[in-house]
Structures are given as structure tokens and as C-alpha cells.
Image 1 (cartoon, rainbow over the protein chains, first blue to last red):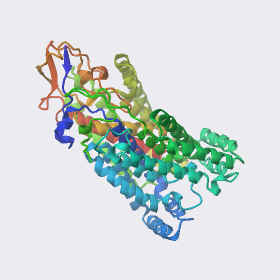
Image 2: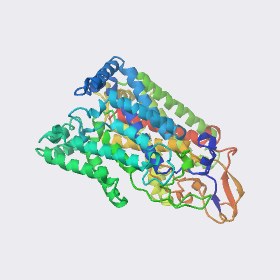
Image 3: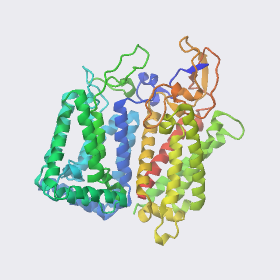
Image 4: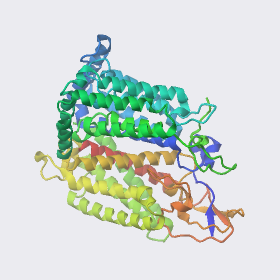
Length: 343
Length: 270
């Protein structure tokens, strides 16, 4: 009888991660898994960008529509961008889709993960302004239910939090804290979710029929079962805009402060975050309207779920004897595998 | 409408995949010898057929068989890989269903079958021949049950991302590490520990979490008994398996290309 002793046949130089990488198997740690989730969403985003709709005038009109309600300094570049896309729809959309495809592949391909994450931050911020009108956060129409503060800015946030580096010192209490540290990661989470709570309470969103109209507006073009779900959800909040907004805002505030709580309570609030994000994704965003065709991205719900997973408290690693893998690879994952460095 | 040249690029990639898969089949000569490679020939056959079918779906000029024939082919392929997955599951448990060696191929085959069965051709293009499928790519046809298309696309993207990670990662895992093992003396710790050739690496596929190599036997190769006291060490200079066009990364690269292209086709036809 025998045991397979070595990891694999691929030479370490192919990984570009140095000699230390060769001893580890291909099972990624938690952060790498989250990076792969982000890569998958980027790939999905890219493939959606290849849809027929995106090569038509409707795409430039959709971009131009995000200028409405924004201050002039924000709106002017959006209008310029929309005009440019209208004139060169095929060329520019092909470039847009290919860039996103390369970002997705680059994050999934280990040697290029840093380059791709850096590119994704720059790209996402550009799209946030020129393509999404800063998520409409400067207008009165931003709502957590319809994707504020903009799905694409959450891509950038995730790229920062999942950056393959580790801060020196104590093990990070959750994955998102590994690169930027726990205080900064918690602050980013707090700002994001408190802003969502603020948007939920905007006058336009707490009007009696505001939420109803928002959800009912998602029916168009959806499959029958999803349209029916939307109809039911819309009728549930009909004339209940104020109450629904307050309940949603309270839930969002609880989620925002949850990462400052002890791990058991934090886990509870993260579960709440995942549930709220899933409800928003299904009922408020209709899966980003992917099933209706013409979606540019899966919208914010899916990304909020991925973000919540990055804040899930992790167990302390069990230090294993030299030469063996740790029994629990959480807070001190196989850093050599990712080629990470202390910063 | 999607510009034809974009679809042509993806069709060209599929033709490359088909050519590479055919070359792998010829090089492996599965009809001459009963080896582990021969046992895996079904994967190259599947890649070859899928790539030809997808090229025809992307570019009408590359169409080969009618939709009905492809539906039968992919129904048989789905059944075959379904059988393989069940058989893997009997060996290695539920993990085989989530991320085993054959599960990605099952998803690929099922997605192809779905596309051929669920495609609704535009009226102007008749009853949905390959020309109709190519028209569907340009936005003139749709798929019934779009949720299924979305779920297939998610699964295909998931497998592609995982494959990319594993292909570029340190060492190799699961079905990537099929190279011939050389035999080296084993340390006393490992003597007497049972394993199979299939257990070289960790399970592959989204959601696979275990690190125990022995528990991840997801290959279909028969267990290989080795003399006690020896350790199999994959050799970078292995002469036959894992080199040239037969290198495991070649098949994986083909699968990544097909997975991404197939996901694109599904999403475009929603």
C-alpha cells in the first residue's frame, strides 16, 4: 500500500508564488475563496456585458439616465460618457466587457490577483461615476432596495478588503480585517450599512407607496413566477412605506454596529445582513433583473452577501508542527500559498 | 445585436478546443491500451463534441448536425456523466456531487442539452436549426426557463473560476495531477497507509473543502496497489502522462474556455 506524498506535478515557477508555494495543495483558504467569489461575480458581470442589449442605443440611454438628479459636476461627465458610448457602442462595449472579463480571470488566476484587484478598484470607481452616477447617492432616489450605493462600489470595497496582504500583529478576527486591519474594516462596514439605513429613510423612500412602486416596477419582463413574487411582495408593503422604511433602517443599523459586538452576537447580525441582502436581491432587485435580460450586473444583493461573509468571525488557527498543515486554517491561513506579505 | 465578429472569436476558440481535444484523443490512443488515460477518454470526447456544437451555435457557418441529433448526443452524454458522478459518489461520498471529477462535465453536458432543448427560435428563422441557434446568440432567440439558464451559468462560472485557481495554484489537486508517479522510498510514517492513484490531490470544484487527499478519491481509475513502504511522488519528468498535449492543464484549459463560453451563450440567450 502506499500514500501519495507530493502535492502535484506543476512546477512552482508556474505559480509565480515562490518556492514556498509548492508545498501546499490547491485548497484555498477563506480569503482566497472569497476572492474567487468576487472573480465569479466579475465574470458574470462581464458576460452580462456581452448581451445584445449592451450593444444597442439603449445602453447609452441607460448610462445617460444616471445623470438625472446629480449635481452638474457629476452629471456632465456622465452625459459626455453616454454620448461617447452612443457613438461607438460596439467598440466601447466590447472593450468594457473584455476589461471585466480580464478582471474576473485575473482575480481567479493566482499570479495576477494583485494586478486584477488593483485594476478592479480603478475600473469600479470609474464605472461608479461614469456608469452609475455615483449610485445616485447624491440624488433623492437612492435606496438600499434598488441597489444604492451602487453595486460597483462594493466590488471596489471587496477588492480592498480581500487584498492579499496581512498586517503584522495579532491575527485578524475576520477575513476582511487581514489586509486593512480590524478598526478600518469595521469602520468601512459601519459607513456602508449606516449609509444604507440613511437612504432607507429618505423622504422619497418612506412615502406610503414608495417601496410598493419600487418592487412592483421590477415585474416588467421577468418570468411569471418572479413577477408573481414581486407582486406579492409589493402588495405586502402597499401603503406601508413609512413603517417598512423604519423597520428596514433599524435592521440596517443593527447590522452596521454588529461587527463591533462579541463574535456570537456578530454572527447573528451577519446572518441578519445575509438575510436582508438576499431579500433585497430577490424582491427589490429581482436578481439584478438578469432573468429579464439587459442587466449590466447582478446588482448589490449578491455582493452584500459576499461582503458579509468576509466579516464572519474566524476561529484561531491551531498551530501545527512544522511541516504539516494547520488543523484549522482560518486566521492564519497558508500565506505562502497566496504569496502574501506582512505590511 | 451582438456583433458577429465577437461570436466568431468565441467560435474560433471553440474550434481550437475541438482541435486540441482531438489531438489528445489521437495521442492517448485509448483504443489500443487500457490505461488510466484511456479511462478518461470520455472527457476528451465530450470536449470535442461540445466544442464542435458550440462553434456551430456561435457561427451559423460552422453548423454540423441538426439540433435533434445534438440533443440526443448531449442526452446520452449527460446520462453517462450522471452515471459517473453517481459511481464517484459511491466511492467518495457526497463530495463527488459537489466537486468531484465528473461533476463539472455533467454540468457542461446538461447545460448543452438544456440549450438545445429549451431554445426558442425567432419566427423568421424557422424551427430552430443551427442557424436559429446562431441567431439566438445575436439576441434573436431566447431560452425557455431562464432561471435554469442563470443557474447553469452560475455553475459554469463557478467551475471555471475554481479551475483557474487550481490551475495557477501551488501544486496541483484532484484531476489536474494525473502525471505518472514515480516510486520513491517512503518514510516510516507513511508506510502501510492505503491510497489510490485517484487520491493525489484535494477535491476539485466549488465548495470542496477537505484537505485529506485519501478522502478525495474522485477519479474513475481503479485503485492501484503499490508495494508497502513506497511512496508515489509525481514526477515532473514523467514520460507519458501529463506531458505535451496530454498534460492535465491542457484539458483543464479547454474546460475553462468552454465553461466561460457556455456561460456567455446561456446569459445571452436569456
